[in-house]
Image (cartoon, rainbow, N blue to C red):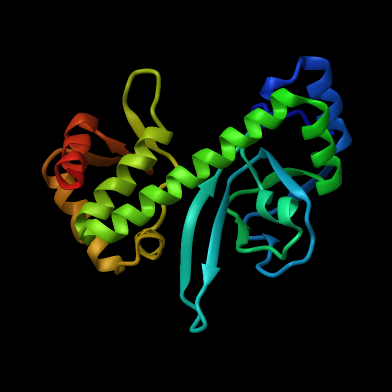
Length: 227
């Protein structure tokens, strides 16, 4: 059993002995970069816990266009919806890096929620946060133009990669095409706007990462267009 580089966040509410017991009860799987971990319409209902690596949640249109929803990283979990309602998978999950994932049958997880009220509450908070993020996305699609959606998504990514020095270094920046599929716009629109932000000193490329040089100015850009 591999040792996690970062604890599974959902299980942080459990004491150390219980958390270790729960993690050891999971099955451990290794995936290579590019492997498909979950397929839309799959009829398994396991929960997945990311021990190592990163994943991307996507859907494909009838014409094969990829629509990217969110990236997941060490400590995150996915597969909650099918575990709760027993319905087929609603999206695809692809490994962005070599990864280690633990899985737990839905019945076992539901038993844990009944046995540990603190875990139940943590899970409800997690689902609530997911709904809030989706509401934010709907609001942005309904009210913001393309450039302003790019600003909002860049700010979201930056806050996920905020270092102790207060600088945001986005280590898993999507390609321009992936960025576009996530925001329902073209690769060219993303490229043009990122170059504009770089020219104005808000972001820069450094050692394969996007660095947000002026987080407060980026926040101001988003606030202006959301108000």
